[in-house]
Image (cartoon, rainbow, N blue to C red; front, side, top):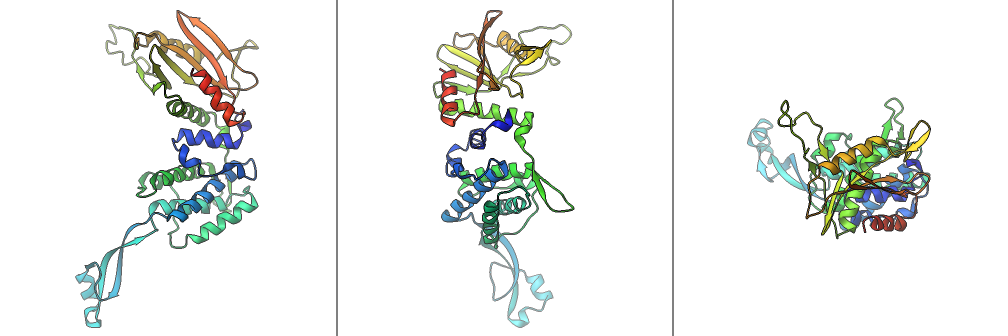
Length: 343
């Protein structure tokens, strides 16, 4: 299923999941020349850096130490005396200099370098990446690491920079580099069910919050309606945290977003709803508080595999809808399908 999702739709899923829709819209991903994710991210970074260059790359103050004629910034007397600089009319100084050589720009440049090692990148995009990489000559080369992304502080053009850093982080996590040859292979994260499940959940959460303003959206911890003499604080019971909880006047819904290669499971060769999902949702509903006078209803949402699901059940007096969203459809159709589900 995941490999069938058009890369343009993958891009929109990411933009919603990162909460960067406006920034993502700056790049026209319809111009991606192939269906390869590495080409998608190369295009996004190339167009993104072109956009930043028109506005001016982020600049910051860098601490420099240098031997100078005269004095600039703070005079380092000890070094100046040790080098006999005063006798030459010179001095050793420490000063701040404004420069585009910032942590954020170093990460973007390093990501371009990583992309150049990808074997399966489109030839035209490779040339663009090379040209932009060479144009960043005033920015230091660094080796990317998780710590580099965690420590960066963006000071200008921040939202779009943060979007490009999100893309760079995904490239860093997805490119598998052969240390011996220096070449790299792009690992298709859409084939990782755990990653796609997290992406699908984040996408739905932010889509509903943004596009369905009639709903208040949150994730909540549901307390067990239970007592125990041996475990009075119920610390051994598993935590119940919803993917998405939504409320509007007169209605309260708990939504679980699930992502599987097969929408339905099997039991003795018969198709069935995944039992663990249904048991989990039932537990949520039976323990959820009454909100605004309304009992919770449940929704299990899956990506569509081979058919549309709109199955409604009432279990122990609680209503549950099991449904699918077709991520292979044009984006406008996906948009409308989710809006219809949330009506």
